[in-house]
Length: 70
Image (cartoon, rainbow, N blue to C red; front, side, top):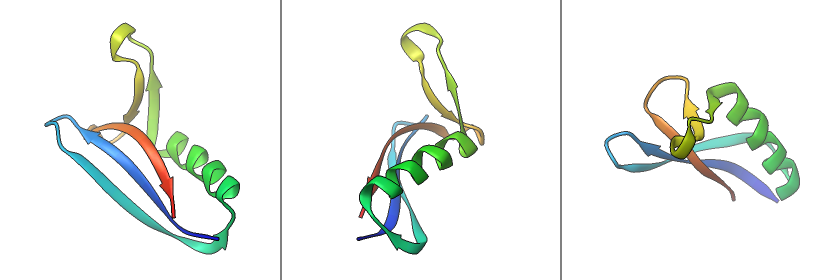
């Protein structure tokens, strides 16, 4: 069972940070990944600008690189 969602973020200064979000209830990995997809769409916007395509955070800090459900 999964208890935490970790979002891997590449900041524009080159640092990689792991932001941890405790889940309100334990869930299976596939449920966590679905939650991660929904959360990504809430906090980021996908931009396809050639070589620089990706999920850019709406707060302007950087890009989402992935998720870990643990």
